[in-house]
Structure formats: structure tokens, C-alpha cells
Image (cartoon, rainbow, N blue to C red; front, side, top):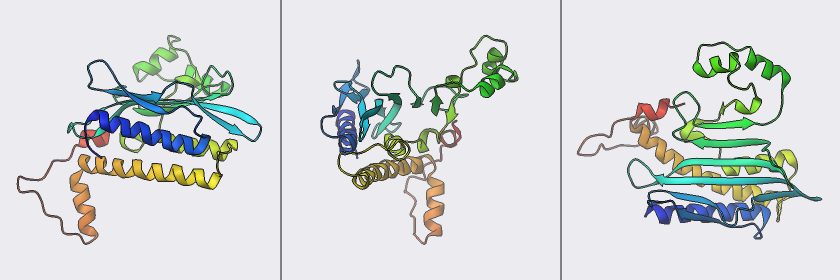
Length: 245
């Protein structure tokens, strides 16, 4: 998919709406793309921001709050997600997320850009955090009592920039683990989620190829394809993209 950033952001929003409404119904507010100041990025979120309410046979039990910010990639051609937040709350009236999947491209070299954070308590884990070493500034602040030893402060890596979980993954996990009942059938919901997941992963494969074209050439050649290099030379790999935490 290509086009202006606005066109791609609107298509992304429409795809999210289709996927979510296939699970929870058309009463769920649609996602919309809105330009941020300056026009070089778009937010994609529900309007109104009521959240995605997931129910079982007895009524609502969970709520998703989903938010994206999108820009163009380094080629100024394809949509790239700059940040994404998928927060899972108890419904109704849940104020603190149970857990949250987040992606922040510019979070920093020493924290995973794609991560999950769990909210709750775990006495043994929190004691281990208090008794941690001091080989990094972050751990040192915690060991010296300058940073709270909370489960929710840990950033668990989940696949990096290219292979992070998607909204479809989170929703299917909630169907399986919490017995969410989709508006149609579980089978139909899983199909829609799988279709959207495949579309996302195909796009990510294309992006990963641009990160490491030499690896794509190697694999295709091993499979019997004949790959002709461009006349102006092969595009270089971008190892910094492959090494990012």
C-alpha cells in the first residue's frame, strides 16, 4: 500500500475498525486518522474514545484502549507506526490497566522499543528488584531506593520493531484466555483476526527485506529464484535496524 500519509493512515484506521467490529460489533466506535500539528504525523484512535469493550455471555468484562501515531518511513513512502499503545482494563470502571502492550520507536537504546508491562504485585519479584545489581543506571537507581521496585516498571521485550505483537494478537489471546464471545462466532472472529494479522505480517516482511536485502537475495537464491541486482548497485543492509532492542 502506498499513497499520501493521510491516505495510508485513513486506510489503516479503516482496517482496524473492520477487524475490531468483526469481534465486538458495529456499535463499537470507529477508528479515525487525525493530523497532528504540522501534518507530518497522524494519530489513529477511536472517535469517540469509548474503548473496545469485550464481553462474555453475561456482559462486558474487559476494555481495550488503543492508540497509534503514524508517520512515513525512512523512504518517505510507506506508513510507519511511531508509537502504539494497547491497554487492557477491567470493564466497567477499570482505572489501572491489567497489562499494556506498547511500542515507542524512540524510547531509548537501553529499553525495548516494543514491550509489555504488567500491573499488579509480585512480592518475590519486587524483592528481587530491590536487591538488584548496579551495573546499569536504571538498576542502580532502583537498588538505591531512588526508583520504585514495582512490577509495572519492568519492560518485557516482545519482538522488537519489526516483529512485535499486534492488536489482533492481543484480541485473540483475550478470546482464548478470558472466554470473550464475539458478535458472530469464535471461528469467524479468529478468521478476521488471522486475515488482518497476515496483512500486517506481509507488510512487516517487506520492511524487514528493506532492512536486510542481502538476506532476502540469499534466501530467494536458495529457493531457486534468479535475482538480478539493480543497475545502480545493490541497496546496503541496515544492521542498525536489525540490532535495535
